[in-house]
Length: 369
Ligand code: IPM
Ligand code: MG
Image (cartoon, rainbow, N blue to C red):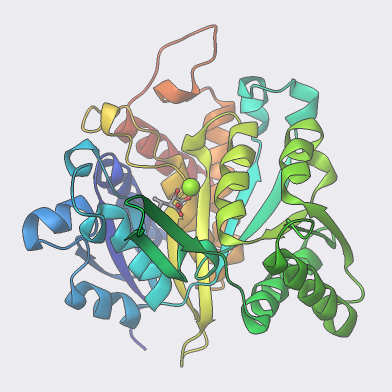
């Protein structure tokens, strides 16, 4: 049997440098755990625009459809701010999500013990935090029609986006969230704005339908998304799994990310329907962006991107034990005091570089054998 295939799209800004550390980890699994991958690489985002005049070529899109998993770094940067909307770096990422039909976006927010002091919230509010946000990723206001900027007869302009969800779009992401809840603490909170939006009313009804008909054993609650944002910073440990739409999920996941102290720590998995080989269509990427201000200086924290590979081991390749090995290696280097600049607390200290962090994680992996 051939090795599982990975397509690496490192992208822009700090994407390539954090992805270099992931490549070291991938090689380690091939060398030390007999878990080799066929790795190919391509362009997405601003770098693809520079080379081809589009943030994602049809060829790259086709490759992404064929591989077992895509690993993405980050897209965007100030050099591309003035580009036409249709060729902005972000369009490349959105096209991948849409055409691969990656409807379920898993964004864990976990607070590592060694970093509990870093949160802007009090330590006892965040220590031990482990929640999972499931964000719908292929519909809602990001993709709904009509959309655009139009001229009005009175000379004004109007900008339009449409919040739109169908029964099946809601049910399928709800199912993925209920499944995750069953494997965790069996609690799901669904967030929408059913008090002001029809799409929110339908969202609540359909999540309730899936609950009653398929997952009555899971404890389900509903919250308005604004109240959910408030509860996330007031008492985040009340949550286990949260399911919400595309736009609310974008906002709530950044909010949850900051609870953990650094955006440089948070991975994500975007999953679609199973392919012929049974593996889900999948793309893994850190939650952080391209951080152009620190790109190319060895200052970036590679942990979010490495943890995204751990999610690939778990969700695409059924290697939960190896995923835990990697997560524990990261926990160990943090407990030992390894800190990229973003992880230095108020008391300061000497930071290590992106590559040194990768090497420390490799050493901890070696020590785990
Ligand atoms: C995210 C990002 C993206 C989004 C951007 C880069 C298009 O903010 O993944 O959360 O809005 O979905
Ligand atoms: Mg976002």
